[in-house]
Length: 291
Length: 260
Image (cartoon, rainbow over all chains, first blue to last red; front, top):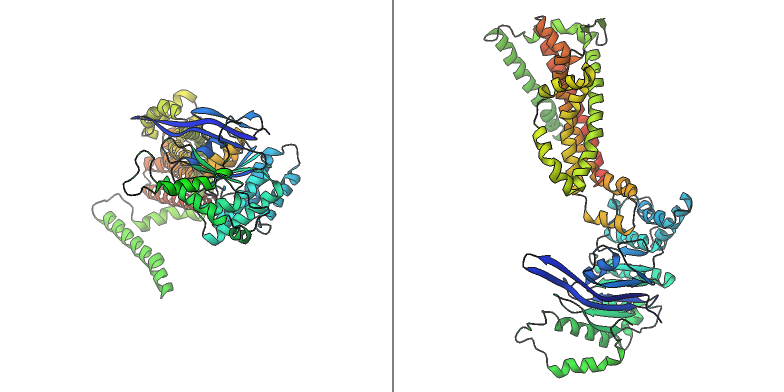
């Protein structure tokens, strides 16, 4: 099956006075339609850069991106973006914020129809009673619910989530992960999400892409997460594979806690240990490449 | 106790300040400034203009509120033109570095030029008094609007611009749904400062052109030797300017609550 989204040899370099800084290099990734993929890696490794390039907010330095058979050039409402900060316009109501996008997608519909679509998605995220409130009157968690509603209401080909729950307390984060997974269960959107929360990735994703540390970050490893769907948090955490996968992710992150070129003295792990982890999940690996 | 404190701060202290100024004024007119009318004389000669504020006894002799209204109408015209020119200029400055590099030096040179210098140019350009006065008010008053609008546009959070971009909002939609509301609080600071300047310019504009109004009345009464009316006009101009500034800052604060 052809990949729905494919990133081919994507790279990003920024010019600096000391020559060009390579942020991301030779980044290759393919997503099937309806697949939920999480990108994890350390802060500053370039995972948000990849996401913003897919969103079209940040031009590529090299490589190309194909979404549903079409090359991605610039931003567009076929991709619903949920930002780390909710990024709502504070002078508009929750409804107005969601409708701003809906207006773009359904220009031929009447005003009332577009209003109803916006209101429907706000109801789905649990804000049916707060449609006429403005962002400053809403809690941070509620604002991010509006952010989710805005992205899903676009009926996008691709959902892009940039650490959307990073600024929430853990209880609210659990709630919103549930809201997200409920919405996703209904809509089965192809989704690419950046996170650094290992449990969040395991709960949400079909595959978890681990990025190596920058500079010149790329795909380090990919983990298949085959917990049955629809998922519940308890079932996922009680699954016999859960801790093995979790350990594997954490192991990867620890290995890449420092730039690869200069492993700090004393942090070298027993080589056999790491190798055995690799062996253990070898079957779960998906070839990384164009096709 | 709190109520007492409020009265003390907002009633008693200002009253003491007013009494002190009146005392210095009286003492001055008694001693070193022989031609300065005392507060009492000023009131005696002015009360007709205050008690019959809308009277129209002749072109040069009208109630003080009537004169003030003439001035306000002229200011409104010049101010409207200032905003009409200043907002688009400010947007261009805020959105384009190219535009800024090209025109900012010129703006910085024109900005400090006095209304007294612009007015003759206005007369040369437009041949008539009123357009010249409106031109002068506009060109002097627009700078705070230009600069504050530019700052407002530049300080629009990148987040809002990203939202506009990912939703692919059209240029007009971006302007009216995102840029304008996001910059509005700053713009309004500019509007308030511009109105203050427009009101400063009116006196000079009316003096030099002879358009009836409170500034023209002031100058004409100076020429007629009725110095009490100079003071009446100064107090009127001050009160009106203060009131306009208060109203504008109330609107400004409300906007900041809604838009930021």
